[in-house]
Length: 243
Image 1: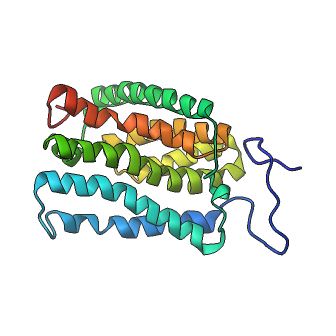
Image 2 (image 1 turned 180 degrees about the vertical axis):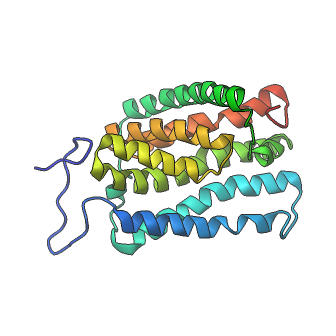
C-alpha cells in the first residue's frame, strides 16, 4: 500500500474517480483568491462603512479573520476534491494534540524572541492587532468572544486554508520547500508589519506538526494555544494594547 507524505497509509480512490492524491496549484490559487476577496470586505466594517464601536469592530475583525479563511478553504475543496482527508482533516491522537499544544507554547515564546530582535534591530513595530486589544478590553463578554474568535475560529480557518491547502499542496516539492514556502505565504498574507514575523514562526511550527502527524488538528492546537496569548495578556494586565 502506498503512503502519504507523513508516512501514513493512503486510502485508494473509489473506482472510477480521478481526484488527485493531494491539493495542487488550482486549490492554492482558488483558495487564496477567495479568501482575499472576502478580506476586501473588512474595511466596510470600519472607517469606510459602518463605523462600528471600537469593541464591536474588534470583535467583527476577530471573527472575520477566521471566516474568510473558511471561505477560501471551501472554495478550494469545491473545485475538484471532495474528500476533506486529502487536506489533512482527519482524526488524530490525543498524544499529537498534546504535542501540538506544547508546540503552541514554544511558538508563543519563540515569536516573542524573534519580534524583540526584529524591533530592536529595525525599530519596525507596526502592529495591526490594536482592534483585537480593544475588543478583549471591552468587558467580560467581549473578552470571552475575543478568546473564542482568536483561539478557536481563527486557528481552524487559517489552518484549514494555509496548512490544509497550501502546505499540503507544496509538500509535493519536499518537506523543506513545503513547510518553509507555505509559511512564507502565510506570513505575507498578514501584511508588512510585526504580525508577519509572528505568522512565519507559527506557520513553520504548525506546518511541521501537521506534516509529521498527518492531521490538521495538531496544527490547530499549535495555533489555538499561541493565539490564547493576546486575550490572556489583556486579562492579566488590564491593558488595551501591547504598549
